[in-house]
Image (cartoon, rainbow over all chains, first blue to last red; front, side, top):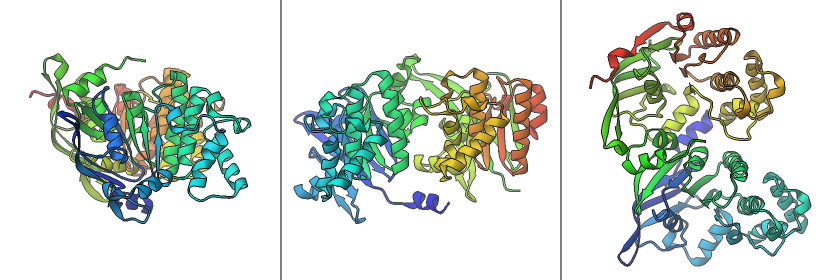
Length: 265
Length: 232
């Protein structure tokens, strides 16, 4: 019970304040504010062009905002404005405390080097140098994402789409990040492969107490993985709340349209 | 006695934007309370808003106005205005809910579906699975099915898995939406027994039961929902 009380009183991990991004006259993202807590999974849903991927890039510091700011509580508990971080600090954050799972695994993996090296590389980047330990940890992670150890020396270009995506997840999680960004992680996968990946992600998130910001157009993915959801349309957040509440009792016309457009299984 | 649930003048209307914005009043002026160790059964015809009231108490449906008072770790919290994070904490520590249908994650074994609420609250996996096994056993789910995902089970079996999942935690509030609807007599009797045990533990329950016999067996008080039917 003590743990739960601590959870209730803890500090946000990431805070977005009035985030905006415009390209000339086009506003891709307008006035987005929220706080994300450790262990919390937030889904950003909306159709193509709604601004959700732009928002993910703003939040992860890959794109400079036109207005507003993103603050992140670093491992030393100091909350800092991402825009004030130096390039080296930002890269370090990305290698250690953050993960980023791309829709296309080829963007997040090195396709020509072995699976073991893909995972081990992240460890070396944070200073690991004992080959045996790196290999053991990499093997351990491949097992956790249900990849046969016999494939550890094969390059991911010889892997199926589902395996590549699981490898990308292992590569991201091996440094024990506290926050993982996911951009349509199941987007390119067959339905049967999707279910397996979602179940895997769901377990890892709970086990590692990860905070996740996941962009998806698939409301079933949002329902399965997220605690909270933000619905975006035309660059704005039009509705936000507890995931099951927004999906079962949608208020805004656009959210009602999204929810009613799901084909029954 | 201090009520565990104290609902005051709660209102709910659906606005159907895709149907030209028509307003569908669901309930209005919902007012009742539930004490520890008491089972209140919501009565009224189909469509009177019983399930909606249950969902409002769970925070699954929003409340347009009024108050959903929940005693959470000794303090009264208004669920109608609580932050999402707080609602999640309240669900983890205070309110359990047995829905009409099981919504299971693909690939997850039955025993883990049932054990999950305990694991989320920090119990060791082995112990949680042992308790899940006990409940599944009581609800007559044969052990050879425990390692299978419940997706392929019959309606009655799924409902029993759902009941086991709902009853496994020691939460002070339990909401039951038609827990016995698709069960045979033997399993209905098990549910009646489980409800009686929860009462002895001081759990406050709100139930929807259509079966007159079961209602008679579990209800301490009946709240007629017809009076809340939105005359709005």
